[in-house]
Length: 406
Image 1 (cartoon, helix red, strand yellow):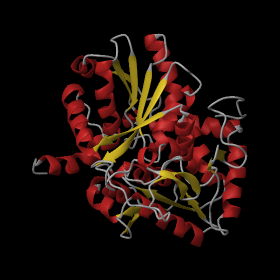
Image 2 (cartoon, helix red, strand yellow):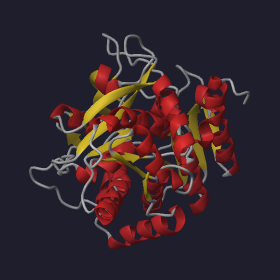
Image 3 (cartoon, rainbow, N blue to C red):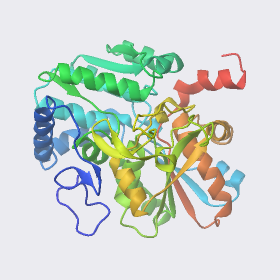
C-alpha cells in the first residue's frame, strides 16, 4: 500500500483533502462528517500497520485465492489476428469478481472501528455477494440495497446474498438501479451512524473511499506487472478495463500509471448510443458535478439534476465515475471510450466460443474494445485486459435477449 506521496507522479494523489485536482473531496451530510473523519483516521493508521497488511494478505491468499492467473488467450488472439491478448483472471476469485479484494480490506477496517452492522449497495450483485460473504466470514449482519430493476435481472446473485445471510432491500425509486441503491444506503448510514459501517463497492464516494478502494484493488495491477514480466519479460503495450464506478480499472491501471510506454483504455457503457439518455458514459458524454459525496464527471441536465442512465450491464449502470478517473481523463493519461450494448453482447459470445470462458457483461464491454484494437496492432504487441467478473449471473439476461428460452 502507498504510505507516502510520490512527487511528480500520477500515483501520488489524493491530497490531504481527498482531491485529485478539482475532483474528489467530501460532500456529505453534517451528521456523517465525524464518521468520515474517524474512518480516515483509522485508514491512515491501518495502511501503515504491518499487522493489517499481513491479515489482508493472508485472506487474499487463503480465502480469495490470489494471485489470480494471467492467461494468454491463444485462440482469441488467433481469431482477431493482431496483438497478443492476455486476461487478468479476477473472475476466478472467490465470489466471482474483483469485488472481494475491496470487501476484505473494508471488513478489517470495520472490525478495527468496532462496527457491528454492515450495509452495502450493489448493481450487478457482485459487490453485494462479496459484502455478504465477508460479513458471514466475520459474523456481522449485512443489509444490501439493490435497485428493484437489478433485483429482477440479477436473480442468481440475489439468491446468493440471501443464502449468505444478508438482507436484500429492493429500491424502487428512480429507475431502480445502482444510483438509487446508493442513495438509500447513504440514507441508512445517516440514520444509523454509530454502529454501521458502509462498505462502498467502487472507487467513488467521499474521501477516503476512493483512495481506500483503489489501494485494495491495486493488488490486480501489482500482480499483473510481476506476472507479465515473468511471462513476457516486459510490460504490456495496452491495458483495457471496463469502468462503471471504476474500481477494477483503477486497480489495474494504478501500478502502471508512471510507465509512459503503457497506454490505458477505460471502457464505459455506451448503452443504446450517446445521442439520447440511454447510456452511462459519464466521462465521454457527461460534465463535472457532485454525486454521492464527491466531485466528478457525471450525467446531469442543465439544472444539475442527475440523469438516469442505461446499460445492458447492471454493474456499469451508474451515472458517475470515481474521481481519480475524472482526473486521469483531464490529465490525458487514460483514454476513455464507450461501447454499446450490442457490441458487449457480441464480445460475450465470442469469448465463450473461443476460450471456453463466460465473462460477465461488465468486462464484455472491455473485450469489445479489445476486439476493435487488437487487429490493428502488431503481432509482437501485447494487450492486457482485466476480466473482472464471471458471467454466471448474466446468462439469463443474455439468454432472454438472444431468444434462447431461458
